[in-house]
Length: 626
Image 1: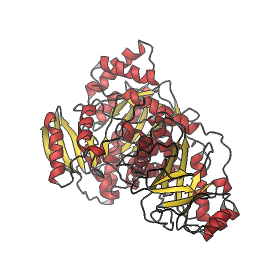
Image 2: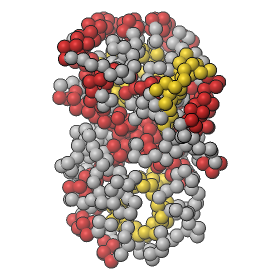
Image 3: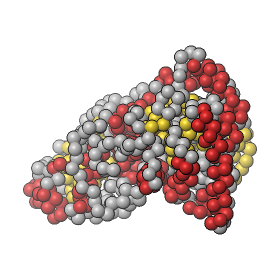
Image 4: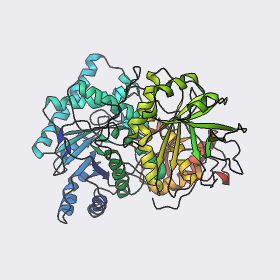
């Protein structure tokens, strides 16, 4: 793979109804219904809305044989009105249901974590090699008959691994690791290869974007070593709703798409399913628009490990680089000085003059030729001002430069000025590749200057900025290259929204926390309570709590597993009943839904993690149509 130049990974083609996937086909867009699968009319209506929005596959939960059999009626209802969209059955816990679903759906998703292995209990199990081999034989004995049914019915299969539902068997041998997630998938893929079953798609998902990206990268590497080229389904599970869900999905999915990985995507939002499609379409179109871009002559740093990257070693300059959290730069050159107390930039670029009234606690950046050494201000240079930079005594300097301007003179200057922070600029169609090339070149040259990535946009809606900026920053963050972010937007968005997006990107990449993180599923036919209204109530009560992770799960499939990555969890336990978790420990079961949010707040308070809300910390609102 070329780190700097975009091209899609070559994959085998999978037949899914009349909409093939992988190979020469475009990246497909899909979503999943959240209506009960036995409600034919509701499922047909929602599937139509997904298709009308641009969805190319529709997935439905099939928790039992009756739901699997009703796919026939849903299929009839769609096709009788001219909707030929392939249907995908989503199966957990029951191989028998998968067998039935394969007769009625164009594709069946199975979860290796609970297909034959029992549901996850977080117990540590011990296996001898012989016992472990016997467990693998159990999988083969049950999986091969299912593949034969799929062959007879021309049904494709998705091997869908979820971080939250890895089996105790895998966890006991591999731990909670990307290697365990990959092996969970490979156990099934090897059987597919042995049985010469090729209509297979793979997904490995997590709510943690770092885990998700690292695991998919590793999976592709392992598949290549074993001669496999199956196509990939990408998604960040439990991404949430609103700006958080969009940023998190754009960051994780975008990082992989930018490297040419991915043949179909689902943006999982805790909203109506059809709302996912435009976001997914924007993301795919933005990434694929860089096809056939001008060549970027980058050089990979010799110590860079794509499969297990670590943060690039830099020399700290004040609070930038080294072990410091990445900083947020912003600008206020239009004279609008609003900031939000929860998302206040560390540095504000003011251009040619300081504002009449400065923000307390904020450092300012001025153009070097007008900078006079005012308190809490620092000079900014461009790559044509090296002589001026040589004579400047500031202990922190910012050097704005694109990769192609990183000449021998600029490199020599940076070697003499370790106090200079590089602000990487790019107007290249593949800005991810060019920003990467600059950071790698600094390492090749032995330079340890911190790097801040300048991203320039002209967006009028928050969603467009969130999708594009998230996609552009994903790979840079996961590669360990980011010491700061500067979003510059020449559109109609307020500075509060731009700043919140920058902080949201850093939080989605797990490198700086500025607010509560919500790990919430998108809902499906298994959901046991009103997901969207519940999320709204939980957010209203907790959004001011900085640094907490709160999971909101519609059912038990991924609930407890993802709770291990959350501080507190709210999981559907039965119709209208909720169980509350502290990390992966269930604290209280079967709470009536109408009491559960209040009980959650009581649990957070009992553990000393609650602070009373102040009016100044309400989230920034944006009136633009998203």
